[in-house]
Image 1 (cartoon, rainbow, N blue to C red):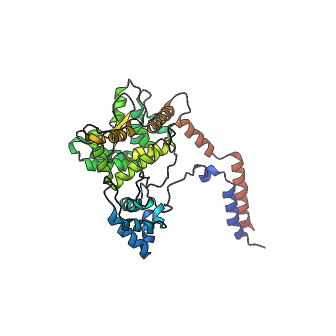
Image 2 (image 1 turned 135 degrees about the vertical axis):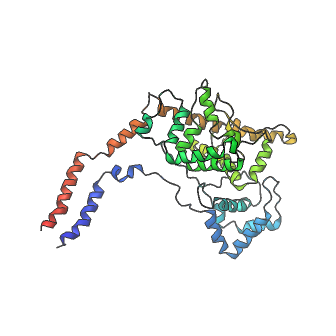
Image 3 (image 1 turned 180 degrees about the vertical axis):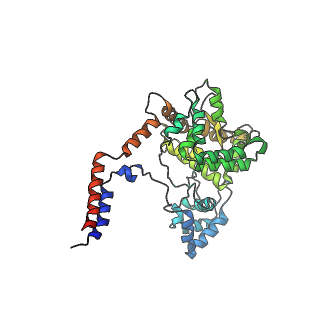
Length: 388
């Protein structure tokens, strides 16, 4: 017969298994980015262990022309690319918040020509597809502090202030981008830190808050979210020059490729390539780069690059296509409009408020009568052997 003390672990495990999932947090598990399946850094380490692969990688690295130049790949470079075709480098990716992101992106763009053996192709996003949907997390105390008559951009700004991480990151870029101390490269770096790390719900709430066309103060607050007086280039550069600067920087080139991948129409009917959440993430990923877009006025939600196509000469059509990919992008416009409607519903009286949803979650976590009975019975079984 088993010793009574040996029953204790089994009884404890039985109690845990019988508890409902909300208490264990099972109902609140969300997928995370986790470890990359095939990071370019890990793929490069594997390649280094293979002399043929390592030599081909180094040779290909010397073959890479400037992204703004026409690709002219020699025979020996094509041969080096061929040697990498079976390498894990061909399918490697990076992550926005990974350590050594710049190194990872450098590796990705080094082997990029090998993906098509030197033929030109539209840049494909180097980022692993890890978009997750998370509801805006608010509590009853925060909601009660919001003034009913304040505009939604102010409400989302207040919600950010009440979140420690969002508030800290927002203050950091606010200080870096303030006009007396404005250093554009520092401002852009802090903007990237905010939109990469503040959390999609807070970042989108601040950037994509809905405003009535007549509410100019709300529209101005939304337009000033990215501190355009410091973050955007002084003057109005040519859009092709802006792209050239972007393509010379692996991070900006990667964010632009991500935007091209997830925000372009797939066919002539305007079907978007991916779902809206991916397009919005790619759009926000451009903020803090040379290709930072912004709202063009205080009265609507139209966005554009801060550049012009004047003086483009023979490249006028190419420049206009680039500019219109932002200002007349159906996929981006629809994604922004739908997200703004979703934000508006959070505070509308006709829908279930986030506070009410939170109350329901709290009620769901309350112990039920049958749980108390189960606990009482289990406790009795645990304590009973001690009296034997």
